[in-house]
Image (cartoon, rainbow, N blue to C red; front, side, top):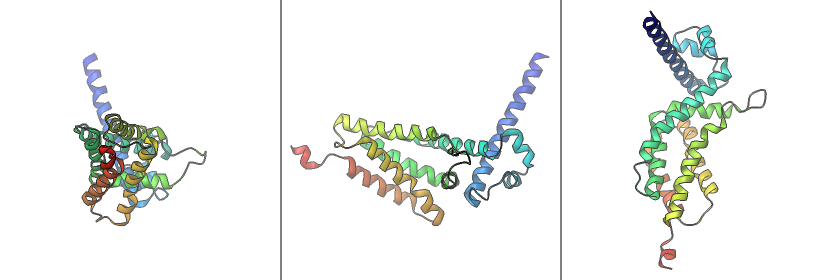
Length: 212
């Protein structure tokens, strides 16, 4: 009897997990397509083929769902980018791989990044809080800073402010979703190659300095 109850609980847990994932995906697609303000639980429910009441069963309102959307986008990004960057044999290669993988993630999941862009553009909640946990972006910041520190530590990168360069890389990548929203035919591989070359030039040691 106990094993049968456990099996039922596991099945229910699987179904509930799948349902939550479905709702989050439908929310992402709706926010990317319609914008934050025009996205309601009813609209998300219609896309998912369920009632708004079902969403309310799994999430404590729109703010809770939006927070889960952001968490999903950042987690998926980390899963996509991290293994690619780990293939880098040195800091310069890792930085290039990070930029290329970041743009590759945007290319693979454009709705994800456009949805987060629309959430950010919506501003803060009525209580003044951000619509998602700002700590979600910390892993990305730490990853870039780690690569830059690695490069400086090995002498491959010139001296520069790591916080400034980290912020610059992030801003350059975050500029892509708005451009993609305007121009869905944007050549992302070429964009990635240009950014990678730009930051390679910005970080590497000058040849004249190497002679000295």
